[in-house]
Image (cartoon, rainbow, N blue to C red; front, side, top):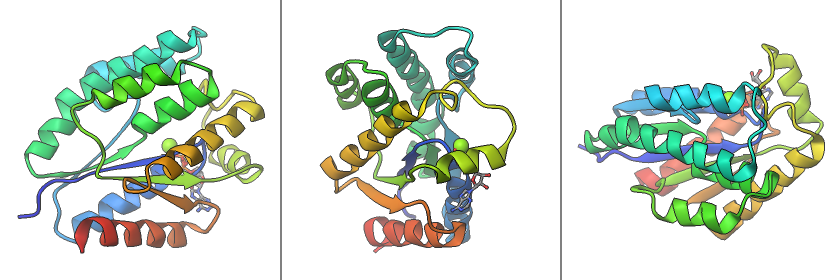
Length: 206
Ligand SMILES: Nc1ncnc2c1ncn2[C@@H]1O[C@H](COP(=O)(O)OP(=O)(O)O)[C@@H](O)[C@H]1O
Ligand SMILES: [Mg+2]
């Protein structure tokens, strides 16, 4: 039996993380893996509660508080969902993880990046593979508008914020090439999926 693996999908709003994590999970199931698909913030009862607090916009958190709330949610998610699945030999496909905190709170909102990397380094587990979906404007905004369904607090932040977040993700991918693959998310859905499966095959299956 193949051991469980931990794959995260990262990137800005509208880059295709949710779309591609569903396609990836289906493809892994078709290959015979046991798979769970999850997302952040959230993925466990306490973490979903914190997701509402973070995204509804009723509080404009200071960056350090927001950072720690994301890590609090993540601690619940890891302990209750991700680690048990990995221990059971399952593959975990996660829509956002550590890199989103560094990109959004660190690069985007100006929270102390050394505090974020310290907390990341103390994590029980690191992803085996991270797909960073890279998408610029105006395509990202067009996709979010077309998706509809109301916007969360991050989606409502301005273009300069989203440009910092994108730059953050690109720097993270460049700094950790063993873990991360930067994928051009402007291609069509099938081509992005093919690029992701190529990365999974070459890095985790061969
Ligand atoms: N490669 C693509 N080309 C065109 N539209 C896409 C592509 N990937 C996703 N979409 C569409 O763009 C919107 C945002 O995609 P989504 O997967 O929700 O992004 P994210 O989870 O990264 O915010 C959705 O309506 C989705 O159907
Ligand atoms: Mg999504």
